[in-house]
Length: 73
Image (cartoon, rainbow, N blue to C red; front, side):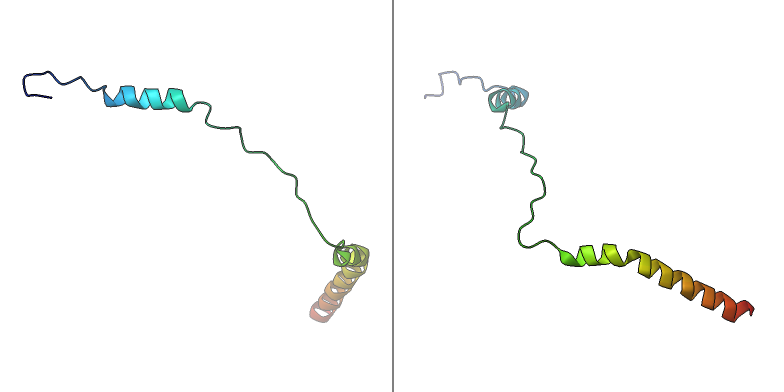
């Protein structure tokens, strides 16, 4: 290209951005949601804790009663 030949006009930056957006839409499928998956044996500790909850509550109430009795006689 010689100095006498006119240079081709370059598109404005906004035009380049708009073109890139138009060409990339839709970029991809939305990410898939996956339910929580666990593997291995069931958690027996959680079952044990669930069975012991009334016992733990009873011990906590008894401890509060003993504390109140000790403080207020």
